[in-house]
Length: 272
Image (cartoon, rainbow, N blue to C red; front, side):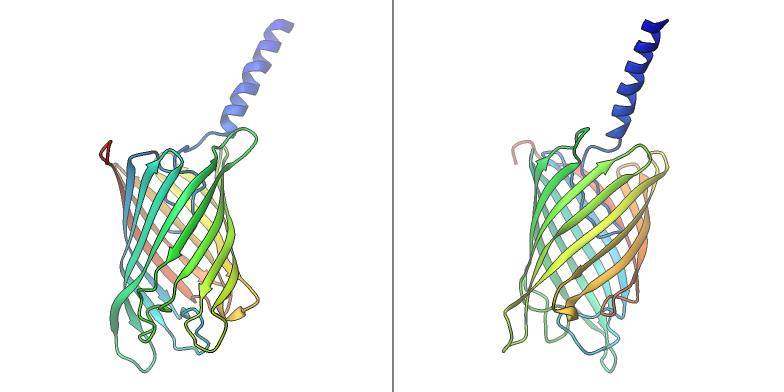
């Protein structure tokens, strides 16, 4: 009997350990939040998301006056590429429809952001998945028409992911180096960027709920941002549909926003 109980305890402990790291082991899109997964796409796998969004009364960076700025992304595009076992590339772009008080509707290019994620540690029993993300926002959005700042920004973030039996936890933290478009002042402003969120399965392999707190803070409060975000992901074969929104809790953030998109995956040529 003692030997039997010892065997049961051994197998029970093994099952608990397995559950502690259960969940998806490959990178996942965390839309409609703005979080990044600490796990990576496998080599030669790609994901493409086509989305739409609306943000109400969101200030442009370095913008002090309130113009009741309303921004539509029509569309937003995100392409993610598994370049190697430990490297993932990202391209993010949006085309914008802008409305502001006292001005007519404006259409124009948003910014193009290019990023790389490098795996530092694969998730284990003791440690979460850890990755380093380096990204730059290119200055292609017009500052005069208020589509962007017409200046480059750089982002350096550490990404952490931990999968538990009932939910997955995501933590992003790092530095945002914002180029200042205004002449006669410092050339950049450094901000602390943060994000914490969870993904909870609602229907196994079919529907997930996501909740996050995201923002950035620094000594230059004009660029401080913060929002509560929530949404769902529904898997439909090779496609994942997401829908969600946000509420800002810092004055220069959006009052509220809505966001939706469709993501699909495909394989890249083996020797591309």
